[in-house]
Image (cartoon, rainbow, N blue to C red):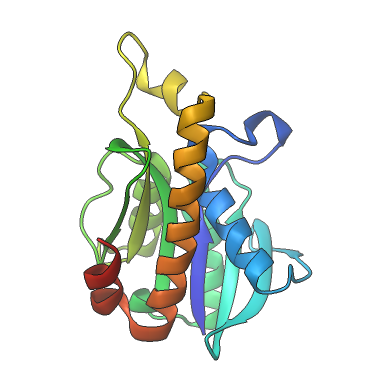
Length: 185
């Protein structure tokens, strides 16, 4: 079993915001898998799918971004999933909107949801796929920026990046983090 968690904030007010691109990328994966029925579990929503012959649990934590680790931890513990078999999809305001970046581990880089996941799982060695939403516009506070919406031109670039993120997540499932990084970074 593999686990892919897309980070974001629950509720209509946050749909389409920069901070919710993790949710959006996971939605694309779910649609590609036939839009499976979701279940309320692990303080979030989950869907069990098959990607390239592998069983994968998709997890949308509904704990608010900064507490996402509670949901990921509960799913990890229930299924006894190894850290290398978890992939976290999240936004990154330090990357341009048309960029994705896969990493096998490292720091949270200022992403509070990812920081909570790493802290609760007790390891920085959790694969993650960062989706660019930046840079932060001049004069904006970071918190306001990440909760803001994309311009029309940015949205077009983000949509392309989200499709690439879904492709990269599928590649991660099929061949692992190193091969996926070589192809998508």
